[in-house]
Image (cartoon, rainbow, N blue to C red; front, top):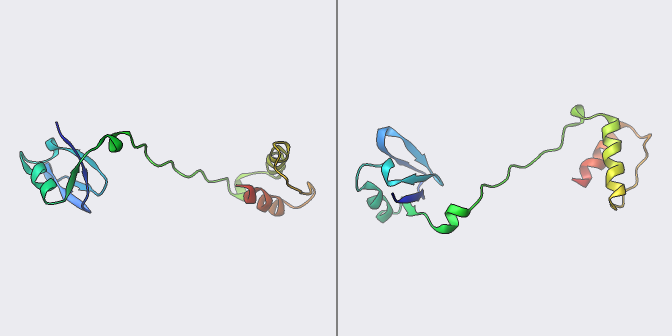
Length: 107
């Protein structure tokens, strides 16, 4: 079974299934012989070893919002950063918003 990657914005397959750019498909997703025609027309490209190994892009991990984290947690994270060797100065008595901005600046 041959495998392909969709190069076009979209390609229609069997059962009115629509495949989008970057999707991986096989020749079984199309009527017999159509996958080869779609390759010749530039809509699909055969899958290479790099395509098979290519991991998905990691999702960015966002820090919690200021409403989701306590002042004590922010101070703890700042202390951990300082203990790990990051040069950082902060006043534990500062308000939560100031401490949060310092912590986010480390991200």
